Structure formats: C-alpha cells, structure tokens
Amino acid sequence: MHPLESQRPANANAAPRVIAVTGGKGGVGKTTTSINLAMALVNAGQRTMLLDTDLGLANVDVMLGLSPRFTLADVFAGRCELRDTVIEGPRGLMVVPAASGKRHMTELLPQQHVGLVNAFSHLDIPLDVMIVDTPAGISDGVLTFCQAAQDVILVVCDEPASVTDAYALIKVLSRDRGVNRIQVLANQVPNVNEGRAVFDKLERVTSRFLDVTLSYLGAIPRDEWLRLAVQRQESVVDAFPTAPASLAFRDIARKIGQWQAPQGPRGHVEFFTERLVAAQGSACA
Ligand SMILES: Nc1ncnc2c1ncn2[C@@H]1O[C@H](COP(=O)(O)OP(=O)(O)OP(=O)(O)O)[C@@H](O)[C@H]1O
Image (cartoon, rainbow, N blue to C red; front, top):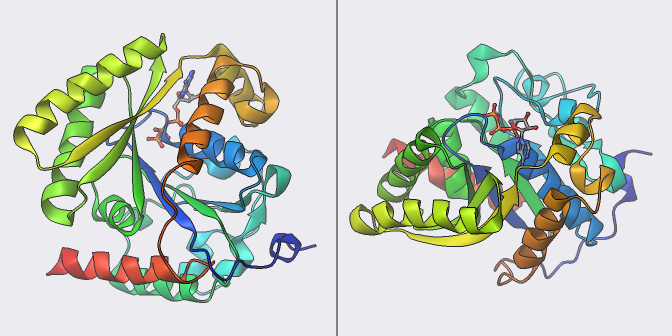
C-alpha cells in the first residue's frame, strides 16, 4: 500500500506544525535530531512527515535504512510528482528524501524553487507535524525553510565553532528574515546542566546584539547507544527506547506537544508553500 493511503482522514480544523531543524555548523546533529524527534512524535500518535532539504548531502534515508525510488531531485527534473517521493519509514513516518551528491543542487534555481512550491501545493496529505531537516550553513535555502516554518529548532554543541556558527545563523535569520523566536537544543552534551550552559553562552551574545528571543528547549546527551543506532540505520528512540538520548528526545517531543497549536485552516501543507513563496519574495526584495 502507498504510505499516503494508510493515513487517517485529514482533520479539517487543524493546520500542521512545521518545524525547521537547523544549526549553522555541519555535524552538530541536525539530521539525528530531525529523525529522532520525528520518531518520538510518531510514537506519540502524531502524523509526521520528515522532509530532507539537504540537496547536496542528503542522509535521512541512509540513516533510516530506506531505499527511495525517487527523491526531490526527480521532482525538480520533472521525472515524478512530489507525492511519488514520499516513502514510509518506521511506524508510518512519512519521509520525503533529498538526493545525495547533487552538488549543483545545493542552491535551488528559481525555476526549481517554483517547482517545489507547486509540488507542495498538490501534496494534499493530512499531517500533524512536518519536520524539515535543513543543510548546514546559512545559504538562502536554509534561511527560506526556516522563515517558512512556524518554529525553528537550532541545534548547537559545546564547541566554539558551533556556537559561533549558530550566532551567525541567528543573526541573518533575525536581521534579514524576521525570524525572532528560536528554540535552542544543546546536543552531544555530557549532562543536562552543560546544555543550559551552552544556551546561556549563546543567549548572552544574542541578547546584547540581536533582536531575537531564544528559548531553551533542552539537551540531548552524548550517547553511545545513539551511535550504535546510527550504525544499525535506526532511530535511537526505536532501537534503544530507554537510552539516555531516547529519554531526552521523548521529553523534547512532549514539550513540542505542549506548544500552542498553530493557527491555520487546513490539515495539509499548502500553507507552507505560501510561506515559502512569501519567504522567497522577501529575500529577493
Ligand atoms: N547525542 C549524540 N550522541 C552521540 N553521537 C551523536 C549525537 N548526536 C549526533 N551524533 C553523531 O554525530 C554525527 C553527526 O550527526 P548528524 O549527521 O545528525 O549531524 P548533522 O548536523 O545533520 O550533519 P550535516 O551538517 O553533515 O548534515 C553522527 O555520526 C551522529 O551519529
């Protein structure tokens, strides 16, 4: 059965929550966070889609052991519809894979962007949450996806380069894209107190120089069980549910469940495309 056919009927009164997961620096744990949060949300009964927007070094599908027939690259090339790229991950998680090794696609051309927007307009899938895994860096694509999402989770590690890159990303997002509310998730910390310290470090500089409100979402400990799960191409949340990282991801998912419900008329992602268009428009202005 096609994964889309197994979904429950759309809740006409609920708009899906779109959360961009970003971080500035490469390797801080954006994809790990996206996958595990998505799985924790699925396990909590949320209809969840995970969208991989890293068109240069896509790895959501690899990390989940999936073998996509089509990717976003095929959508841009006109070889298939966006709907055809959606594959079923563990426990009914819906995954839209990107394409690896397409270096020329790391920046969308204008016509590709239009293609993506059109594709989303026709993707009439009932959803509660869409997690958008963004690439590293502060490219236009990263900024546009963060601006279009309702919430931005910024993953940061306790390394000078991670904190510096996170600051640079926050600066551009707030100054150029009007994103003035960001949730900070400390990853790979030895303990939860260290996570708070990383947040405080970032908060001290942003509150002095930028017009942005950072909230501390929590911390994910450095966890060998997580590495083991990665080797098994599974989420740690599923592979080792009682591992420290799994407990932390579940806690974050619970917090997200308590956020104020997004405002919007529909239970599919059409609104996201409208926001993408608006974000792109304001970037070009
Ligand atoms: N909490 C953690 N504990 C242990 N290892 C972790 C943790 N978080 C991430 N890792 C490991 O760090 C590496 C990088 O993680 P990941 O691929 O999620 O980062 P990324 O920010 O998405 O990278 P990229 O910028 O290349 O897309 C992976 O090998 C992952 O297993």
